[in-house]
Amino acid sequence: MIRLPLVLTIALALPAAAQARDYGQQGAVFPVIERDLLEQIHSRLVAMEKSGETAKLNDQLKRRTAARVNRPDPVAGIARAIDDRSWSFDPTITLAADIRGAKGELIHAAGTRVNPLDSVVLRADLLFLDGDDAAQVAWALKQDRQAKLILISGAPLELMKARQRRFYFDQGGKLTERFGIRAVPARVRQQGRLLAVSEIALSAKKEPAR
Image (cartoon, rainbow, N blue to C red; front, side, top):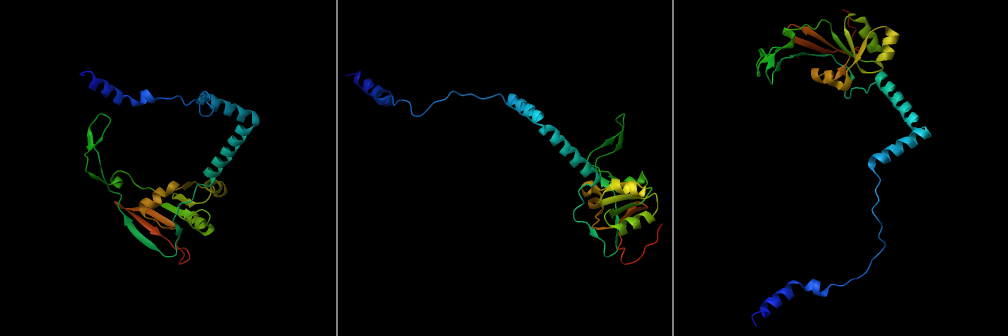
């Protein structure tokens, strides 16, 4: 009588084992076979090489790269100036960290306000223009020859060859965004510790060259 509760407890705890059945195989079973990933990549590359697909892709890449170099993506949101607009730009920045020299000496402490124009001079005007606008190109070429010609659209290499002047490109619109330029042609020049920024409406008046 003492063993009966123990026998019942074991029997209740293992009902599945007591009633287990073999239901047999349900559907087909296949062995797991997986090719090595690097082997698959190698096989694909070999096949592409033999079929000439690799050479074709390389040629397409070269053409796209050459096209992008000669004609970068235009800066978005820049229009042709229809009104003159001028303002001052203060290039002063607040340092987020200490600036130290080669020997570890402190040059500027974090939190210091620094104006780059106190140390360097903007020796030439920056002229921003649309290289696809003949009037803007003509205007820029009439300005001081030392000016930096910066395109927001157009083909700098073609213009350099045709005009025998160096043209730059505002890649990603970093400079126009920094100066707040929304229309071209535009000029940036130094005035003391500030930069004078001007958008110039060519149709409104003829601006004399410097």
